Image 1 (tube, rainbow, N blue to C red):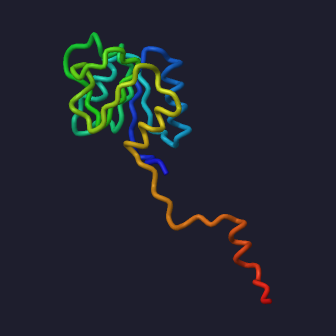
Image 2: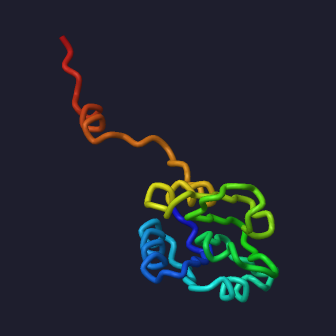
Length: 142
């Protein structure tokens, strides 16, 4: 079960890309999503350190030419990141920092969110229907 209270900031210049990522997150059960187009909007929304976003998903092209304070978020996913060196802008030491060379797909995004918001362990054993029926059938004594 996803943590519905997680706040997610998506930053990409392309509207369709933001929409694509938002729809994938919606399918995973996340709805507290703020999509923005510019790095200035990211800086403005993350300027208050007392209320950082839980997750920042950002296109590397937005952060490359930035100067000034870096965005604050608990967890960061930087995509379209061609230069995977550790000195690239990504924020103030997030708990989880993932860099992808391309646009995240369903699998990448699901794995990233599973790291941040692990699925709840199944409670008890799951009994298959045919096994349940087998246990109800009386045993013939010979």
